[in-house]
Image 1: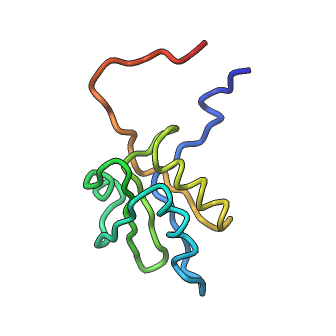
Image 2 (image 1 turned 45 degrees about the vertical axis):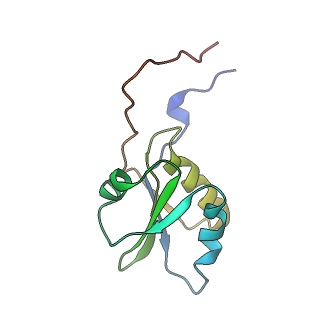
Image 3 (image 1 turned 60 degrees about the horizontal axis):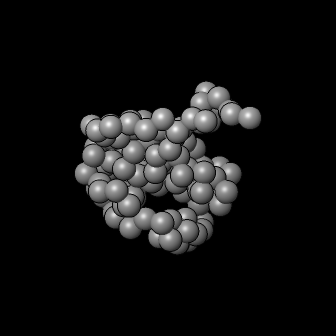
Length: 112
């Protein structure tokens, strides 16, 4: 059975409300997959544009810690980060604010 793409959520940045827990609760699992870099507060898309693949940005604003990867979209880093952090803390919030990376090159049809 092939699932519809519309049933697969895609995410952008992940917002983690401030709590009395160490930040390492969220960053240690991410460090297994990404090099996490601290950024001054900027819009998530701006941070994503400055990142290389395999890296994630951690930013703080007045209400939450914001984590963003290189790209949004169904198969993007942000979707992976969002799902990983949601398993750690169900109160995290996904914001669809990072566009998928567009790669100029040949495409592959992976459907069967």
